[in-house]
Image (cartoon, rainbow, N blue to C red; front, side):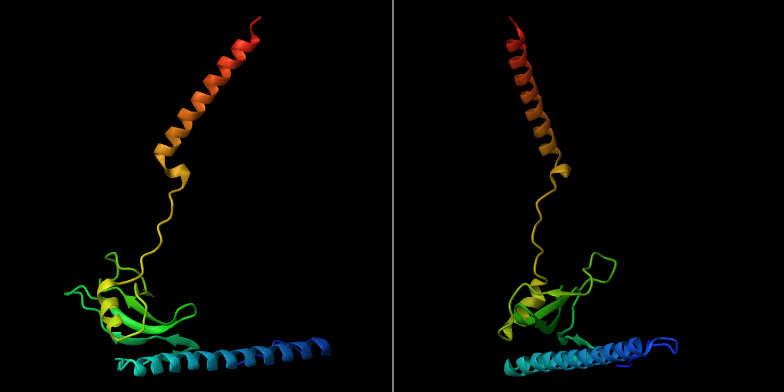
Length: 173
């Protein structure tokens, strides 16, 4: 990674030292990150080998980022998703799927976690057929639920009527 010295000739000496120290810390962090990502790629490839899977393209590092291993291409005719192997911080080795539909036809963007765990070669077959993990259903916003709005208005009307009757009865001699 290339670092640029942000100190200018007019900066005080103490600021130039701080800029140099900062640049060195940034370079060290970048080197650490590149090593960590390279280790992840190696772990993914090792996991595939242990399962007896030969990837079409092994996991690699590009521009400091993990590029998942390609295990199976998408097949639109049979409605099969593409399957990739990567690493998830919560689940460890993970399968990712890419949509078989062309972009612009309702396909989801990029890669998403598969619907199943990755502990055996058979899981690749399942991921290819099942696709991505479904997103959790969100409860509707009360303001967008028309029936909830109507119920709230009816309840409010009932409360107002009861209050008016009570006040009317209390207000009479």
